[in-house]
Image (cartoon, rainbow, N blue to C red):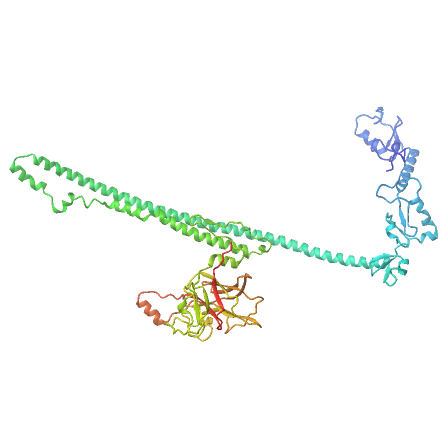
Length: 612
């Protein structure tokens, strides 16, 4: 709609009811004009027939006829309004006409040849003159100076592929003489094709990522459902545990109450019996006191048989049998058992075991979940605290740290099992070659005869244990575990078939090679030479693992190991005749070895640093 300043009669040509241009205008007897449908509807909704403007009331509804002259005037007004929309003044941000001398009207087209923008009236020559019709017209643009070469003042018509910029024809003779140039339209099609290809690729990536988002959301939803189910199952398990503990508590309390009731009943029976005996004693004592008062010899002698006490009643005068009544024994027995102390000790042990197992389980769940790649455990998080033992199990960062915290043991070398070429330090933590090749004969088969090996003092027949050995600077070494009955006269390295699970390393100035089992396994080539090796054994799982402590990586694992052995029949028979049981779970002893004869090679059993 045009402004009031450009079209002063606009308000006069608007219906006062619908506030729009008249449609089939009619005039009332009072001289006011309305749309036919507007005034008819107004009268239909009112009880009075009156003019909406002057409020003049008519006795009957007037017969309205369309004012054809006024209607033509309104149509002419509408045509002028539509035409005037094209001649509106340029607003801020719109491209003005470059030809208008007065107020700038909004441009309709821009000519790339004339480098000017034209409104509709000034664009008329380009639509009429044959020469001007050949000019290229585009939608109005305001940055014509960006389309003109600053050096030559010509329009950009070419695109230089070497410098990746728009140039004019004159530029091909100067700075871009040897460069490859193509028309802007050709470069435009190429770039548009590339954009279309890139857009399709981006759309494919967008669709792929959208599908991934849906899959992740679905997976997260499924994981949530599974987690909720697991939480419910765990709650059910713990509820069952609590119910079982409460049932055990009730049974224990009921048992103690039954024993107390039995003791009280026994005490009541004993008290009744003693009261009867006391009454009998009082009666006899009274008769005896009366008899003592008489001086008649015949009466005393005649009354004596009734006062004579048989042998089975002599204990009435002896207070010793009842000095410790049976009920007193029962009550003291209850006190001596100290049920509270027993229950406290059992619950403390149960709580300690459950706390450690739950802490390990929580850590395993944290490490095994795929989400751990995105989230890190809180360093300050406390898992569980045993208030009775004051022990806190700190959450480890990786599996090796967990092993170091939970399974580290103190290993000491057993000098009595060492080969005669080996020398053990006083503290039993260091091993080296002995200078001067001394020979010690084997003592009852305890010493290794041919190989430079030595065992640890303590063996393990269950559970898990871990120790660390420094091997830096040693040219050839061996670590692992062997069974207690290992043949110490073997001239080679122990194999799993013989009861030995080992790992050895050989280092020369040309190469480094490592053997999980030098007899049956292929050699390993590691990226870096381990300085400290950790040995971990899980007896129940049948696992022997070797770790690079500094790199915190697993080097090799013997899995599926069978530590259980069947003892010889004669040995088992002798043990059974002696009345003792022979376990088929042999002890595993740490084994250490150094090869060569360099006394500077020192193998050191280091203290396991329990990281927190």
